[in-house]
Image (cartoon, rainbow, N blue to C red; front, side, top):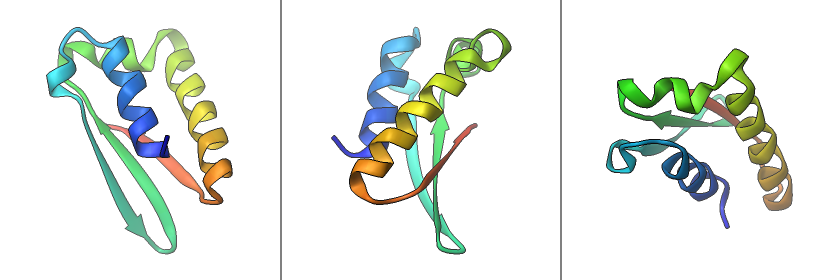
Length: 77
């Protein structure tokens, strides 16, 4: 599973409004940035208490990206 699809799958599993989840990949200055867009009401579920869910999601992304031989940065919008 590619890294952006993994982020989208996990995010859709966490939120109340999975149809509002949108993942966009942006390439800037030799680095790929994955922007995760969710509904405003679901922002807390994706970030988690003290950022714990976001941190775990970034860790999963790092592992998936390493398997693909790429580097990604996750931004939650």
